[in-house]
Length: 362
Image 1 (cartoon, rainbow, N blue to C red):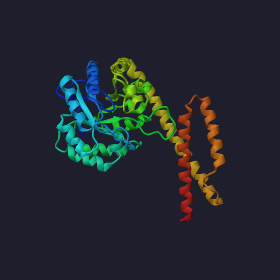
Image 2: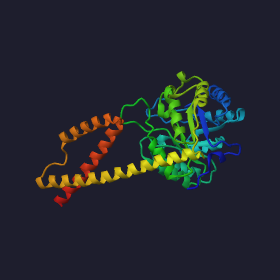
Image 3: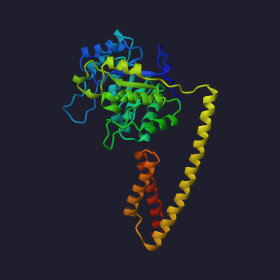
Image 4: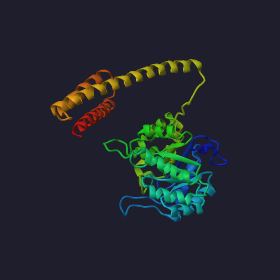
């Protein structure tokens, strides 16, 4: 796929890094214009965002002002240097947004999960030269995200970017949505040149965590930020806890450190290559050890098959996990990482032994 870089999205755009900010929802004309006016003073901010149509789980919640708010965004364009962006979930939304001169459209997480909805939007975009952002789906399904991007790309959109806003957590966490950075990294590997913008507001769910998440995205070389800002976050009609004031946003952006992607320092590169060589050697050893482990697991499976013993030995598994975690703790390894690793190994062991049992029954 051939994507247009962010710095070529607009004639007056030269920055390779894009900052998008604005309220979760466009609530009133005054709120929109005053927020935009304050954000316009922050030089790093290039795009003003505001939700016009808000998908809500239950009826009766604030679902946005609708088309009327698009007139307010036209005023933002007239009175500031900022481009404007809105979320679209239907072909009608696309039509109305374009009619009112919206510069950037984005497809939200709830829409990305539905290929029918994405295709309807893609069809409405066919032949239209407008930048489109696609947020990741609610669940950590890389191919659902990829599918949505491919549908929009198939409509001829080349000013295309992904927005990483985190995934619904299945365990208790201090964040609203868990980042699962590895999925964004895999997407970046799959589509070289595809810009990925981080939405730390939706990851955080709490403004206290926005800066650290934004910095992490910079450390991973993502291509921009979408941060929700409101002139009065405490009284916002939606997502109050994850919005910051423009003044707070200015401080956050000033505190962020942009890392150098690559350097020409020969000594640094030599040191890095030496360390990476050691890591490569260790990785090979790990893979060889895993292969050896698999062979032993298969032997156990065959012995269980001969004696008609069940695959799952719960007491053994619990004792093994406990012992390994003690060893891992002494070695200074992260407990959560080791737990996840052990569970993966155990799942694979069960799978291998079950295959052997099934062969006997055929």
